[in-house]
Every structure is written in structure tokens, then in C-alpha cells.
Length: 120
Image (cartoon, rainbow, N blue to C red; front, side, top):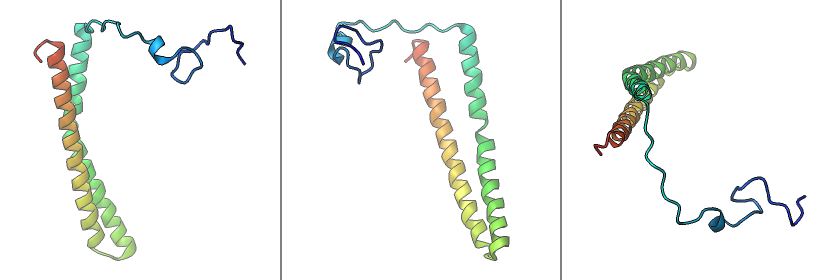
């Protein structure tokens, strides 16, 4: 337990220290934009390229997992071909969802790179 004269060692929002308005003055100037090392930019571009190139693999895996899972369940339950068709459609939906998410990631990465280069 802390006495009334000690200052808490943490400054979280839920702490018993200063109020939020006292902890963060309003006249603080924003930080300068971060300057990235050229090697870091190159690595970031390579990561984004590898991430985008895996889209086809993600789509194929989702479809194959749905197809094989449906075939296995059909053989176990005797519902040929219905579960295979249902899980195949679900695999296609999941695969296309992954494609759309990858496109959004690539767009955000491109926008961030444009901002870093002063083109945005």
C-alpha cells in the first residue's frame, strides 16, 4: 500500500497518480516523421511481395482442404456428394476472402510506402 507522499512508479490510465489531462499536456508537438534505413525499406518491400505472392497458394489450399474434407465426410457418413459440394463452396468462399484480404493489405502497404516517399 502506498502512503500519501509517494508517487506511483507507473503512469497508466487506471493508476492512482495524476489525472490524464495532467499527464499529457495539450501543447505537445507531434513527432517528426520516421526516416527508414534503405535496407529496412528493401526488406519491407520484399516482405510485402512475398505476402502478395502467397495469395494463389492460399486460395488453392482452401479449396483443396474443403474438397478433401468433404470427400472424407461423405465416405464416413454416406452422403455422397453433398458434403463435398458444401465444403468445396465454403473452401472457395474462404479462398476468395483471403484473396480480398491480401489485396487490401497490398493497397495499405502501397499507400504507406507512398506516404513515406512523400507522394501521398
